[in-house]
Length: 104
Image (cartoon, rainbow, N blue to C red; front, side, top):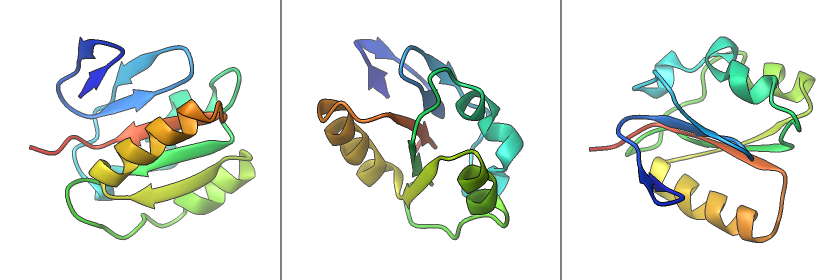
């Protein structure tokens, strides 16, 4: 990924004011604890665009409920679509974060 001119290798979390490496390599490893930086971000995003890898994968159990409880809607899609969607939402000045699983 190239984010704000910086090259990132591997999966990433993109928050309003920072980007972090994310140690998640496949959709099955996503759980609320792996999204802790999103859940504790200030300001907290209202939307999380989640790129689940090259293809589409099913959402992990309990993810939607945990994010809904935190007041964050999840848009789940493959990583390519997630990158495009995130960029559009940023241009619209929406309260958005992204969790992107790297594809090779």
